[in-house]
Length: 59
Image (cartoon, rainbow, N blue to C red; front, side, top):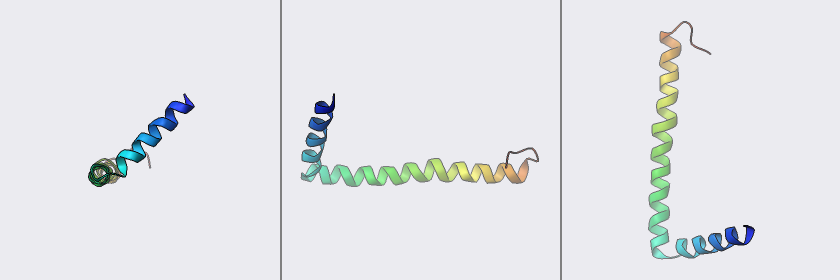
């Protein structure tokens, strides 16, 4: 299992070191930020709204 993980890590590093890897990395980074903003930011906004609207909201 450990050897398999190391092999996968090596393959990933090999892929990421190529031009495709750079493109993939950049897109993954952008997707990560997009996911972060949509998930966490919207959730915090919802929580804020719930606090102001609902007397029984857990604070």
